[in-house]
Amino acid sequence: MAASSPSSTLIFSTLSPTPATAAAATAASCSSSSLSFTFSLGPFPKPQIHNGSNHHATKISALSIRAQTLDFSGSFFEGGLEGDDDPPISPGSGVTAVEDKEEPQCPPGLRQYETMAVLRPDMSEDERLNLTQRYEELLVAGGGMYVEVFNRGVVPLAYSIRKKNKAGETNTYLDGIYLLFTYFTKPESMEALETTMNADDDVIRSMNFKIKKRKY
Image (cartoon, rainbow, N blue to C red; front, top):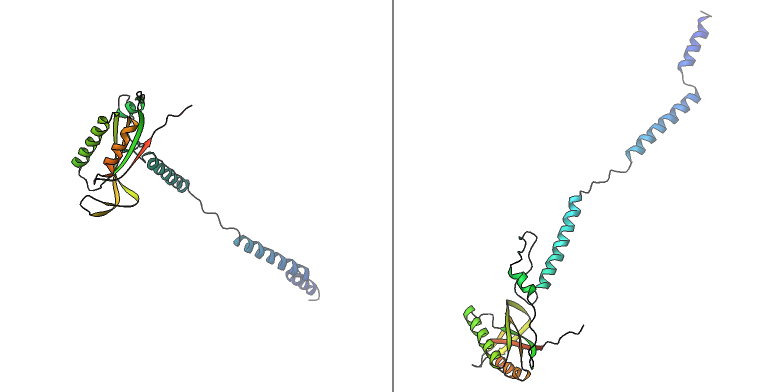
């Protein structure tokens, strides 16, 4: 019995934690908890941004720019530019013919002019064609040559225009049919054209411009 007591004490001492062992175990436990807590508070993974969103935004921007370009290009003349899905223009098409068409030379004694006329928006197609023919004949009668007319159609006005007709009625217009006349004529014939357009009930507003040749 006396010999077994030290053995029991030794076994008990081996199984019981010493203060140093307890401190080490506590530190290890705290360290493990800290590592686990630190890992749990790690940065969240960044969400993946698909390239499709950026591509979509770029596409919208490009379309907006393209829309602004088309509107600017067709500011005075009727029609527009071809789109990406349109078939290619053949060499014999009308667009190529216009691009290849040479500007006529100014005949001696004449000057180049442009006249912008705004017509009543409620005019029928036949009425507009008759008015166009009437002013073409007036220009030719005054010595005009190479008369061309461009129709832009009905366009909203930048500001309302009030005009009194021959019957004494005053009308306010918010839009009108835009016509552009280009021609060569004698300078003295412009007064008759301006007087006729100002007295015409179908013409809301008109302006004449003298075109000067650029010197390069």
